Length: 219
Image 1 (cartoon, rainbow, N blue to C red):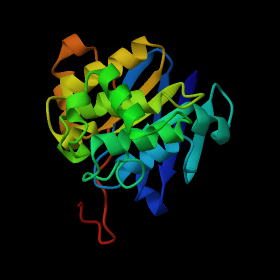
Image 2 (spheres, one colour):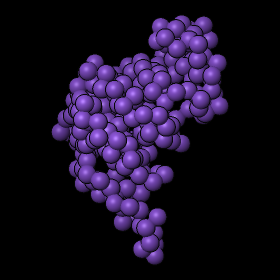
Image 3 (cartoon, rainbow, N blue to C red):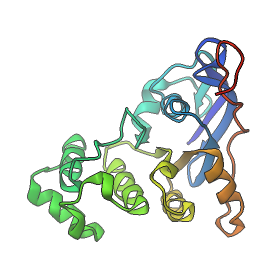
């Protein structure tokens, strides 16, 4: 599976997302740079087929098929869209995701699932207090429970703090399992990834220009 975004943008004059192109595919992990509060989520929505770009095309294996893209690509931890409320316990988050995946979702089933992943001791902890790497591991594992999922767009894991190599290695493990992985990060995290050559991090896109206000002043 190969997802290609060509010359996409969103908003008047690219305010929500300036023109950019990127590509990611099965069995590999790539990162893309998107900064400011809204752009990472906008890019994630477009890359996963959940939002139409203002300009450009989004192709799934060479075809325009947003419905199939939505089925095959999970949008994980996108602020204000798919991120769990920080005060919900991990057990509650797991139970809800098991339900969405069509699996038994009682507290007992959620505990068993967490135990199998090695995180049972975190069951009562609010998701907002979970270690960033553990959060990424848990949310990605929950995402691939849904039938038909073949890839993940992970949005702004760097916003939770911690070292980038933790969640990047987890994304790499999912790629090794055959999933198409796109991780959307800010500029600082991108620099950190590039300074760790052992990780083999590859940029799927070019840098995005700073957001411009109506009067031309950069935000």
